[in-house]
Every structure is written in structure tokens, then in C-alpha cells.
Amino acid sequence: MLMRKPSNCRMKNQKSRKKSLSCWMYVMGVFAMREAEAAHHTHEILFTAVGTSKTLLGFTMVSFLDDVEIAFYDKKHQQLVIKEAWVSRALGADFVEDQQYRLMNNEIDYLWALQNWVQNDTLGKENHTVQIWHNCHLDRGIHVSSRIWCAVDGEDFCQMDEQINHWVAKKPEAKPAILLAEVIYCSKKVKRYLEDYCVQPMKNILQYSNVRDNVPPEVTVSQHDAPDGNVTLICTATGFYPRSILLRWEKDEQVVVWGQESSSGILPNSDATFYLQITLKLQSRNMETGYSCVVEHRELETPAIYPVPVKPTKVRPWHVALSILTVITMLLSCVVAFITWKKRKTESAFAVSPGSANK
Image (cartoon, rainbow, N blue to C red; front, side, top):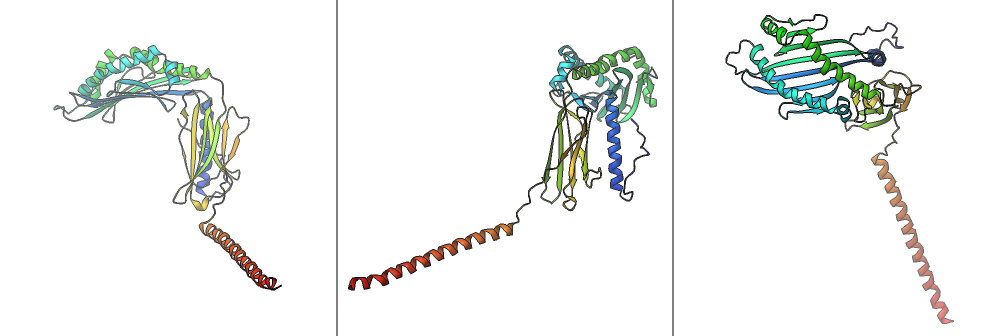
């Protein structure tokens, strides 16, 4: 997805590249949030087979919805793993069981691909990789496009999309394979397959997640001091729905920050809500007060500001030692004063007793 850089992005201090970069990152974040709110969704499925022309050594499948992994399959365990329980409920037990069965049978298909797509390996002793990638797109619930393409040893082999409506060889060696694919996997079968295993599952997951009420994020902000003197600020938002959210760092109400930013990306929770964490790593010389995490979400009327908690000033070791020494000195002074007073009182008592006896 391409975005043009807005021309109205102006920073107060044009001499600072970091400030300009920070502004640009903020604008990109706003654009990303608006696009997410436009209800554009993508479902991607990647199959990877590794082996020789005689043996399939490895076979995996990974499924992503809007860049979030939702399912995984591995030949070693031969088990389809759905990452979240609510996704399983959205797909339905029958679909999950059917997909599990198909994946186990796909191992034979990918061994066939290794035998027929790999060229110049008559001995069959070298390992090769075959990958097939499907994707489909929805815009406001409407299926707008799908695509399927294949690669051998990391190079494009063949592909099909709805606009072309037939298989296209991406290298000369693929031409015999696509002639066979046109017979076995004609465009109608491919469209039906993508509808059943790419488009419809995505619709079911999105419809299931849309049943729940909107929920504002729960936000926590913390600070971690590293042994090397650097400081990491952590802002975590969780339990929010819908998915669209924007987190950013500000200092004294300005978007400009001096440090290294990172993000976990928006991840799903087990209850169909979402999670996002951003961090800001600062060098100790740049760590001052005034940093805040600003959160924008549909369920918040205005952007919410969460200041970084101010840590209490640490007492230096020599201050502690001086305080202890002062207390000990005071205690010793009191003890010496008490002993001196007691001694004088005793001497005074002995001096009075003889005179009293003579009387």
C-alpha cells in the first residue's frame, strides 16, 4: 500500500532530522489509523515445502489476517494450530477439521511440485524450496481482489490473479507446469478455492469480532532503568476494540522525541480485543521530565494523555553513610553524657555520706 508524503508537515526546527522524522512517523500513523477505519482487510496464507525430488523434509502453513498470525501448520506434528480460541469459534469446528485434513493431503501435492518444478537436479540429492502464497482483500465487507503465486528456491515461478484470469509463467521452466495447471487447477477452481479458504474465513472472523461492543483501551506507562544508564519508557494499551488505535510519545506537549522508538504491532487478545505496546529508549543525558504517552481510539472522545511516572530521587550512597554516621555520633554523645552524669552523681553521694556519719 503506497502513501504520498503530506506536503503540510512542518516542524518548528527544520535543522533537526530527528524532529522531521518524528513528524513523518506521526503522520504515517494517522494515515494508517484512517485506512484501518475504512475497513480494508487482507488475508494471507503462505505454504512452504522443503525437500528433494524423493523426500518431503518439511511442510508448513502460516495464515495472517491484517498482518496478525492466526493459524499455523507443521508437518512434524501434523496439527493445525489456531492461535486464539475465539478465531476457532469464528471459523467453526467443521471448517477447522476440513482444513486439517486438506493440509495433511497437501504434503503429497508439494512433493509432486518438488519433483516437477525443480530443474537441473537429476540426482535428487539437493534440498529445494517450493512456496505458494495466497491473498485476498476485502473493502467494507466486499471482496475486491485475490491472488495466488508460486516460487521455487526463492524465485517467482508462476502466478494467477483475477485480472489476468489464467496462469502466467514467470520463467521459461514454468511453462510446462502451467499447461498442466490450466487443466488441473483452472481459473474457476482457483477462484472457488480462494473463496472457500481465503475470503469466507476472513469474513467469518471479522463478523464474529464485530459482534462484541466497542471497548476503550486500558493504558499503563512505566519506566525501566538499564545498568548502562539508558532509560526505556514503555506504554501499553490492551483490551481495546475495534482494532484501530494510535499511540505516540510526546515531550512537553510536542511530538518531538529524542530516542529510539519501537512497537509490538497490534496483536489479538484471547477475548477478541487487541493489544499494542510502544517503547522509547533514551540515553541518560536526554532523560528529563515531561514525557507522556498519547492514545487515540474511537472510544475516547479526545486523545488521552498518560504522563510517565516521576521516579523518586535516589539517595546517593555517601548521603546514606553520612546520615548513619551522624546518628551514631549522636547516640555515642548521649551515652557519654549519661555516663558522665551518672559518675558525677555517684561521686557526690560518696562525698556527702562521711559527714552525715560523724554527726
